[in-house]
Image 1 (tube, rainbow, N blue to C red):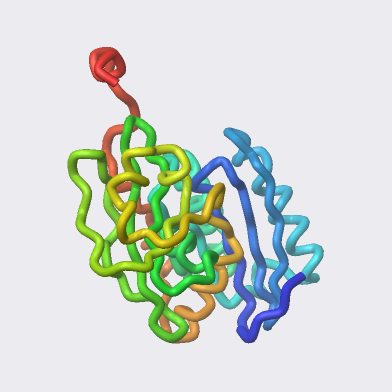
Image 2: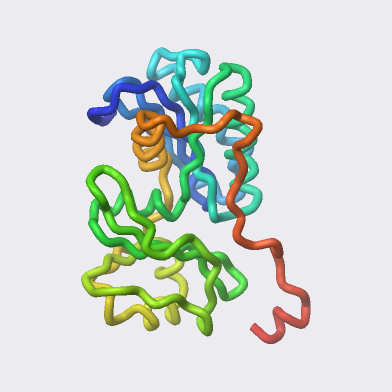
Length: 232
């Protein structure tokens, strides 16, 4: 259990990558459950939610809001997180706060200027850049799908890079070698950072009805054709 200065009851789910995580803010206390799930998110998530609610001695109807990692990320993982949170929010008549998975990476870096990237497979990455502004973030590069021959410029220097996109794609590391001052390795979006961002936003009035919550995919295509695999 970790203590934060956030007075809200909020349950968050993050399943956009192989890491399956849930977080519950109870007033200023943060409860966490995490496991490397690979492709078992749908089997593991509900038991994890039950355990974290039991640990916090709360029921879903006692939440002020629900949050989820909106994406980008795994199509299946995003649908699982969105569907679970929608169901809980419908039943409790509470709002949902969607949070970008790339912004979650920036939040958990504890840095001020962050270039976040997730592996999108098929030789591509999901990318965004953020600068901290008090307790929130300014979007410097909006979330997008990128490849080696189509990368946005990054203004200035002293950026911190994080996420599986940098771990798995040398072309991404090479392209931003000059502005990147430091790289955080082997980090994935986590429900704890989703919960912290969502709680701050909820405190400012953010949140949508459950039926309006939706994943952020950034890509319509989920697999390469045989010819495209041969070219890769």
